[in-house]
Length: 153
Image (cartoon, rainbow, N blue to C red; front, side, top):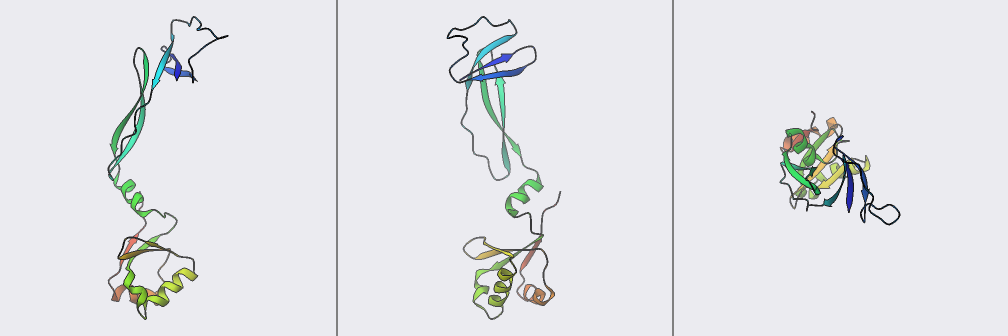
């Protein structure tokens, strides 16, 4: 893979899978245009608090893909964990509640009303809702369930 690169404008003009040819021959290029080999890099794996930003570097003979790590903002980290931005609230509830006299009707109500119940881990569920119905507030209070607001910027 090669590119035609304009050194004056400092921009890529075109990409060519097998090199740049005109009628099967390498043409004479203007002095400000060069053909560079494209060199791809393996994308690194970021940590949970980082993101990877892709960039390109021009050398005399190559157009090299580069990756750099950038720290995520607190909002980006919160959004990564939230996963379902369409919901205003997230309740963390133990799975064991499903098997109680109180928990089973509450979970049934949540699913009937199309709230989102997803696995957090082996012990807990995340329950995404837009409002907490007053009739269920005591369940949250009595069981010390964690209620979080959707992340905002």
